[in-house]
Image 1 (cartoon, rainbow, N blue to C red):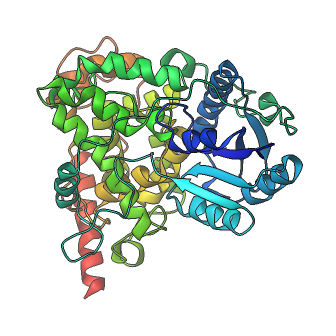
Image 2: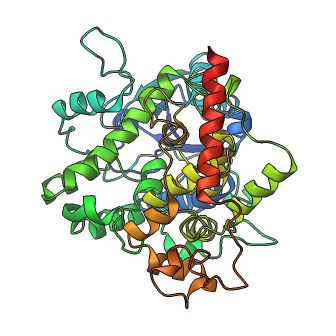
Length: 462
């Protein structure tokens, strides 16, 4: 009999456009496996919100596999050890997978390849990270020329259909029970609002794509309006690989209007992976060393209290607080508000960007190492391609400019009865309810403090 092959799932939890599955199925019997490995990533183990998503996505994947006569084997521990054990139990000789580019997954792939015949395929990005280079043969560091070069290689190949059925060897290795992993929160269950917002899994991803197609043409305008449903909300589905970027491209590219702006966001995701391939520690170290060595970030009890107020949505800045409360309640935050909230932490509160990156890592259902790190360093001004630190976003102005009143009323109910324009800045209009906190710092004061800190950094650099 043909020995089985192992299909190693990670952040590619789908059957459609899944090159590793198709290659494994063509060879013979397949043993689909997901390993919860918290040891290899160490401090980058999956955050709490992502673990909630993972539970439901794995349940969905197992159901899809069972429809094709297969099932998902669950194991917990180091990937190379668990895969080697399954191979010994089943007589499997090969492991198929999609390549991943986070530094811990690259290390895991090397460790697996030392013990088993590992065959890696691409498919989680528009192009394999690292394959797109400048005329001089070096990797791109700046997004705009990277995106220009990437577009020249588009469209991506047509998505591959899932196999009709998946052959099995008859005898299954022992599997953990998903519920025993305790991926969902209890005592308290802080994720009660997640289920109303999300349908994790491949079917949920397909539904989200279909729902977005009609809005794709107006993406450039609506994506900046927190009070409107202008975002695609595809980011967690993309992060967990429940839909491929190629599939999204082919479904949306002909929408017209400003769909190119949306496609550019898909390209930004590719760009972020190219950056962490060049700088594996990008999530914990500034690309511009002066931001780590010379910028006087605040610390101590007052800074800790300010960080907690930001995390809880109690800063006195309605647009910031609305975003942080949306994040806690749903595991997601509107894109424009993410930038405002990140800028507020870094520049108004002068708190190290890594504190915010870590909070997002734990609370976002779409927490992606590359995208999270690149976005935070872009806002901070510390990245290889980033906004300048002295360009300080004015959250009160941004709130009014992007018509965030309805968004604020929904997520900050203390302000539900405040009229416009006062709802954007109730303190200044004398309409702040007692139940809502005063600003923890004034905008002008915060701006002056941030610029002074930037001047200190420049002086120390000289």
